[in-house]
Amino acid sequence: MAEVLSSLDALSVANEAPVHVQKLDKFGRAYATGKRKDAVARVWVRPGTGKIIVNDRPVEVYFARPVLRLIINQPFAAAAREGAYDVVCTVSGGGLSGQAGALRHGISRALTFYEPELRGPLKKGGFLTRDSRVVERKKYGRAKARRSFQFSKR
Image (tube, rainbow, N blue to C red; front, side, top):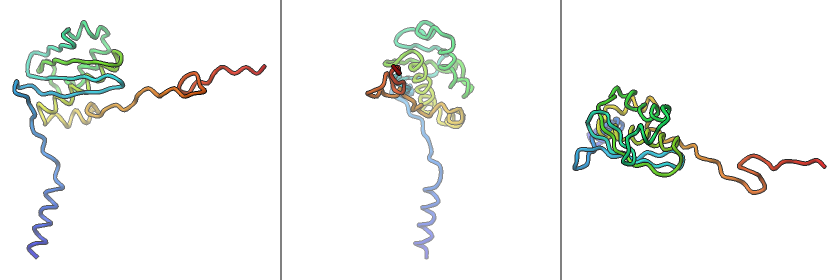
């Protein structure tokens, strides 16, 4: 009987939510990768003044469109941490919009590695989920993925 009770206790312990711990490198930074379409962002986050460096350039230079900078700053706004962290990242692949989305995903993941208690608000905002939408492949016998060639009746 005691054996059954101990196994039941083990089951109840197994059903508890996993405890997330802080993951930092030897320099005190949190590292994460973010992806969107064909773009991949490697992100390092550390406490600072809110400076964001993308491919050795300030974010204002690399992402000139304000909409893209707004996308990048969304995780900080959702977590109420504007200006609290410095971000250094390298992005490659895809276009500017995909790179901004990848950077947003990477920043969100790195923030959860630095402060595990931020996982709730970031998850609720949908920033931790990888956006799986990618370009549909072109099919043979068609002009594009779905567009047919122009039809001529005569």
